Length: 290
Image (cartoon, rainbow, N blue to C red):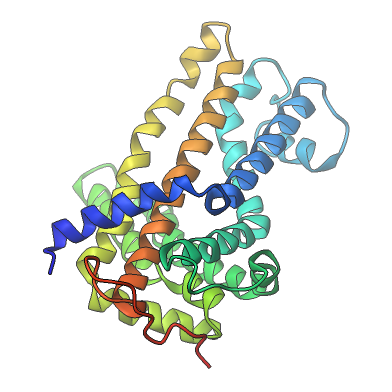
């Protein structure tokens, strides 16, 4: 038996080892390429004052003078977040579903496989969209509420406490729904059943599940400091560095997401579909649920 620290360490070892199989992380690489293409199209639309289309509409929605070079680059991170929300809600949930199915094969040594993972994840896109929408709403809801209450709360300790509380509630929501998308796309369970099972499983393994959420959260925090330097980048007459920084941050963030997906699949496989880490693999109820 392993203590919790050993178990988490082994989970992350296997999570990083999943990079050895390119087809596991290929879906997220496709997602990054789509983000990069949209971001560069947005830059081209602003710099060349493109007349219409989604990119120009998004750009004009940020600032009336956004098209002025290099002012656009100061607002580029906000535009990137808008693009990510749109892309994540469409192709993103599908590609994450494909990634989860590929990781299921990897962590069961190809003994639990789902035929045509790209097609299977696409067929389950509506359910994956609903799961991600619910998680997003429950995660951002408290934060947006606190932001609206800031004029009432003021700038004192009450405002800071409310902000930290909203972040804490968001992390708990992510913890409870950590396994929902995987359960839905990998097994023949409905959206509600997958969500309920995820909550029960997370509560049963609350400390490990919370760790699998907190570690990626803290890993990506230093990346925000890089984006905070965008004013200096623009003033040094190298505004293009903001674009390159966004592409780099996006790539690293997706790499962190891949490790999180890999660890949660590995953990579920270890607890529910096979024997402990040091023993031979034995499928236990590995077939699709009815």
